[in-house]
Image 1 (cartoon, helix red, strand yellow):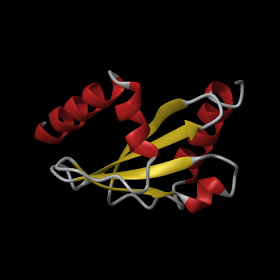
Image 2 (cartoon, rainbow, N blue to C red):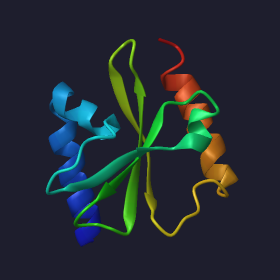
Image 3 (spheres, rainbow, N blue to C red):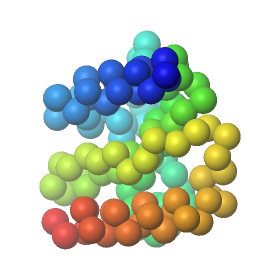
Length: 107
């Protein structure tokens, strides 16, 4: 439950501010809560601008974020356990592609 509460707090803080939300897709960004942001190349190959966000306090979870740079729209595609192999979880990948197509390719 502590991890869920921490993820929830982080998401609320970043969702309330457009400039802050942009940090969740900035590979140079880190602070006391966000350890690192990095591209997910397997999704980039599918033309999905997706990033993995590692958090400091909840190391066992990852945020999968995306961006439409042209329209300046940032999205959250998934919150998933670190132990999950992103590339081998085909069910998750198909859902992410479907959600991205529905929510971001329409812009």
